[in-house]
Image (cartoon, rainbow, N blue to C red; front, side, top):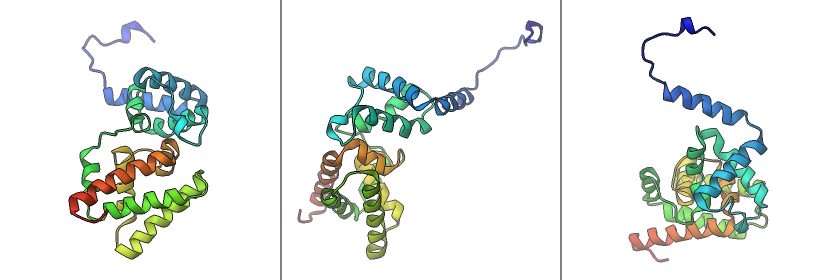
Length: 199
């Protein structure tokens, strides 16, 4: 480093590049470090560091699961806090793309089958949820000709208000069985009512 090599011309910071560096830094952090930082931010933003009380996860496991799930798509702690909104707030604000997915004529059937299946699951661990969602996707593909990703979009839109984000199985674990069923049933009933279908 030499001061004589510094240019006199004004420089404009590349914010996209800085964001990329920050994202890489978050990815390289140890799980405990990034979880601690994000839990502190969640406390500031949402008033609590976790919502584990409505799930099968311990508070520390809940925080770690959410932190590792959202850090891959976050450049800053503020952005990570926003990505976690679905897990902290009961009423999620849906993006336009999510509303469009929920407006599809098959959405009430998908949400109804999803909530019914979750209620019947014996264990709410990762593998049983994953197997159930995989089976649900294939059932709708073979019986209704609906693409697997479109089935996933409907469920994700109902649970998080977005079409992207953490693994759907992880989302279910973070919300807990009761919250997943409640969100799916509420939208299923609303959509059926608008279509004039029997509920």
